[in-house]
Length: 441
Ligand code: ASP
Ligand code: MG
Image (tube, rainbow, N blue to C red; front, side, top):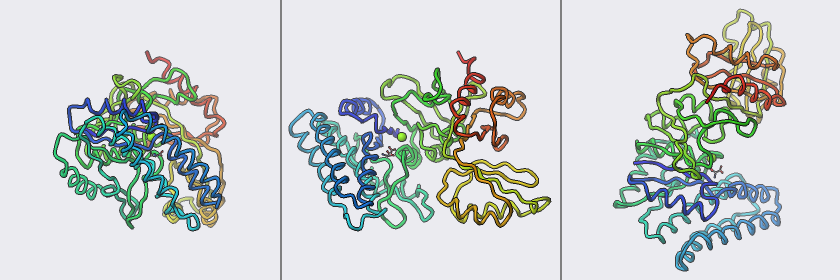
């Protein structure tokens, strides 16, 4: 069994959706297809939500009308028969009734989550009806019945496994299974989601729950690249990555994969392949339990980082200091990304400044607090085995003219993280590229 996930651009036009249908029906194995919403739909639904939240009903209605005509055109072009078009449109229109009907006076976060869920519900319904029209037996499995979050907001894999298997058993083979990425229910049974880009995570959870043979994430580029193609020319896809390397890259800015999606695959040792719908035969990137190839594999950057330095004479020779610092972040549910310490100070970074004011207020009780905004983490990923000398040197050689705010090395054998001001990002990505990869064939 394989799980194949297609992102929004892979089904962004009727032609592309038809190409996806061809691709998945060619698979000899049992396939579960996980779909995102059509490209730009989630953004549009969020815009509608934001307009309603600010009581701007006219603007919301204008966005709804635009989306509506986009789907009308899409449906008209997708299906090949009048009957198919009718069925497909019927399935889509239900969701527009719901979108138009969301309560406007009491529009809150809960309504917004219902609203954004319509994107994946529509794309999967359209795809299912298209396969039906083409005479391909398919079953549409409602993700809202098996993807559920627990009290901690974490997906419940056991629940998923039990309920998904039960639903699948209701459909005798051969049948192609389709389900929605991204959407789920929370611990209170409300409609919720796995955060932006979460369809990858759904695919990985489904793959892990079914202990499938392979998870494929289909996008519109040819795999994870060794550097950010928006800033650096001559980047190339990395053929093989270990789970840990892929997790670091996804977390530190490689947009191609949702960072949480590596963990479930790693837990059950299921290979993840990143593939390109525009070039289905290209090898893409294989993420698996082993690594191979060159020692330094890739560079990624994550913006929007805030650095916080706490300087305290009380830290000198004291124990328990770091614990108290960490507890502040824990109280505000704010994860820490990087950390470096000296005898009298500790510097750390966060990427979610929502509670920054409260956090710094509490930290000031321990000493002097300095906050730097607009920071970027540059993450160099590879197999930095401690007994392989010279690896760190190559990185710092490349960076010799760059002012660095923080360095983190040795936390794992997979990365060196460097904190810089965002204004230096393009330059840093470039000098690292020249210094680390220019020898690549
Ligand atoms: N449609 C959602 C988004 O745009 C989920 C996804 O595409 O993975 O974030
Ligand atoms: Mg995505």
